[in-house]
Image 1 (cartoon, rainbow, N blue to C red):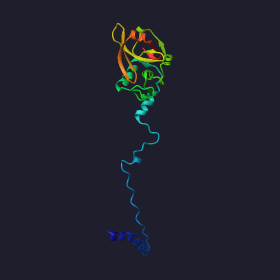
Image 2: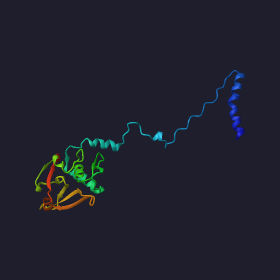
Image 3: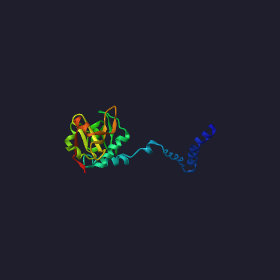
Length: 203
């Protein structure tokens, strides 16, 4: 092996000497082209500058509608998403909404803010600033029942035509997290709750 390497090393020099005597200079052979980087190279896989994947683009497009009008069906769809995902209750943590366009605080008021698709997480002292007070019998899907400064629940539907009890969604507490249950109007009234309608909801 050493002999072959030595012979290979002498070839360029031999060719040069031969060329000088013959009047023709023979240039050494050029180096072999570099081997292309493998398919898993970080350089090859690196995304071009300014690249944004489809999911982010979609989220950015949808984000433009935050704070705008919303249908009752969309409000309930957004509520059901957190219920299905079992988003845990917290007054300091945040979670994405269904389209991953924005994060909301995962407490009762942050939950209602998320369902209404507003621009930020309000609290139980400011949600009524963007709502209109209504009568109990006027409650429709996507409205809220609020105990100002304390707690809020999202109205889903009446349990019967008598309108004496309802299905609600709520981020209840660290003990219950996301909750979907029935509650009576009488208990809500005695607890200091009042029904409200979001000003930008479409009937």
